[in-house]
Length: 90
Image (cartoon, rainbow, N blue to C red; front, side, top):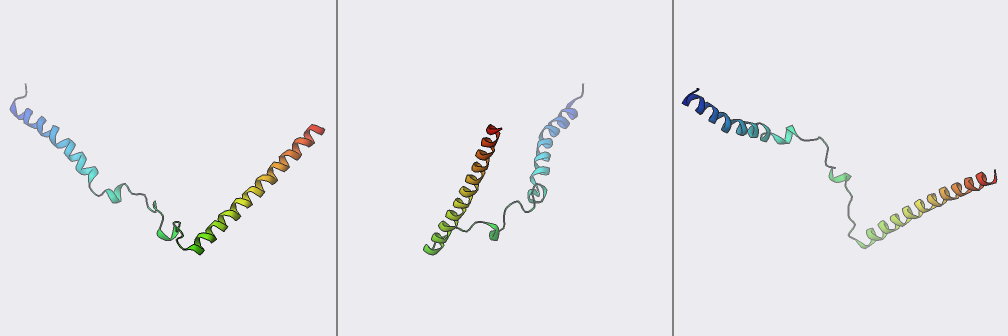
């Protein structure tokens, strides 16, 4: 059998191995596990309007967008209905 030196070595390995792993993966985390340009820059983020005029202009922009998307959807549905009618006629 091994003796006391082997037991001391095993105990040292049991203690030092997890500490070494934690030290290796715990140092320099910003450079090791970071993704460049992951977070948007402040000028790329959405600015919440606080002034009354800004709120009204934003509401108008959203209304125009909603109406544009509705118009496109209605056109698409009309084309699909027309195709269905043509297929039924044939």
